[in-house]
Length: 123
Image (tube, rainbow, N blue to C red; front, side, top):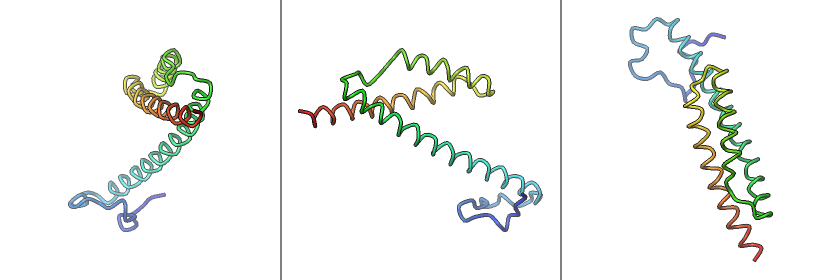
């Protein structure tokens, strides 16, 4: 489906001067691509939310059984796995690793918080 510049939504305005001197067909394609990017961004956010729901459950399970918040061996396996997935998807493996490291750090932080709160509620 092709969009014209007149049916842009309020959250996707053409930046001032962006449409000046640009072929309307190019602007339509730009809008189409940006719409796809917005949809992908929404999907990424929802997938991350689902991932964090699972890791929260893992954190409670670890806390209940007094397991450490971090699991370096699993993290290393996950990084190797993600780098391989990135390569096969033609995504920079270094970028994928940085992203996963960021996510892992946040998960560990959550697990530490859960461990403190679960331990406090048991004592």
